[in-house]
Length: 421
Ligand SMILES: C[S@@+](CC[C@H](N)C(=O)[O-])C[C@H]1O[C@@H](n2cnc3c(N)ncnc32)[C@H](O)[C@@H]1O
Ligand code: SF4
Image 1 (tube, helix red, strand yellow):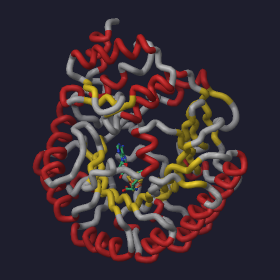
Image 2 (cartoon, rainbow, N blue to C red; image 1 turned 120 degrees about the vertical axis):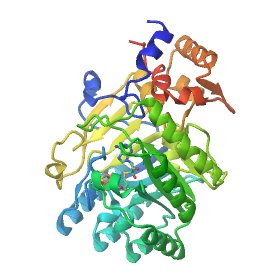
Image 3 (cartoon, helix red, strand yellow; image 1 turned 135 degrees about the vertical axis):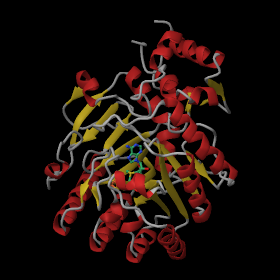
């Protein structure tokens, strides 16, 4: 197949987005026993997964469960703390570039356990060298915040809070079993967060829902204008792991993104077309340092907790619980070891990097070469994309998606995945 034919054949494939592999089983032949090696990694980020939520939104692809009783919450946190201690005993000499606490909903924990989580976080940092740009972040929902939790976050030295709104359309949220907060409540919480010492707030919105339309997007934009967060993240609904085939056409997704983009940029946020994060601050990309390292620089990260993903120069791993039908049953006191560890050849590392890069709509050519991409293969793909106006060169060694390319960004980024087979 020529590159042009390959591109045409993939343009409307709903599975091609930021996910890779399309199914973990695609990597079965690379699977090995034991943990993922992090040999000689000089720069590393941590991710701590809290799989508990107050509600189970039906659109959500993450490993999560309804928040269990306080005893089980506590034993989960103590187990994760043990895993972190163990990892630090085995791995030395790295600078910690970032640490995100996500989920699930970390703030769904009881107040007592949330403060324990903050202690687990502080202990995770103990004895490590932090990078100059280290900026930790924690995920939350408005309905699970309390004053004590906000104080705990700030006292632990975390100043970036990422909150999910998804959509201001009640009908769409109810259809997905998500109970939202009203504008007044959100605005009160943001004022309190700022008073307590949170310096950056990010709000997550999603597009690609059935029923989302110009009017509902305009209401979301109005809400952003009123709440005025420092950063906004726009997630395209991924339906790869969801039972229902709910995805919209690529054209509809493009139109929805464009409407959000124009509105967000019109309010003074900075961000390139095709990027999913927007910021009021010209010096950041609208992300925590964990995400900056992971998405933009393709650096290594170690995930702790149920089903968390890790990536090093050797491969990718997923902790216990990734494929559990019932994640509650995967909770245990003995540790969330890396159950699926894949030592990957360079073409698979390249593909994983490209899929993650799609969030930012850009990638580094040098990083692809470091990961071992074949130079001829790379030049051929780049040549095709440049000459068809799908990608363009940016500053340094970066290549960015164009407006034309973004209409089928999954197909564009997938051209670099492998042999084209
Ligand atoms: C790990 S979730 C946790 C955030 C928090 N529990 C909440 O619901 O606000 C982080 C973000 O992922 C996004 N998300 C959830 N399900 C998604 C899906 N199927 N496709 C794309 N983004 C999704 C949402 O915007 C959500 O805020
Ligand atoms: S979107 Fe957030 S609250 Fe909803 S199920 Fe997913 S992690 Fe939980």
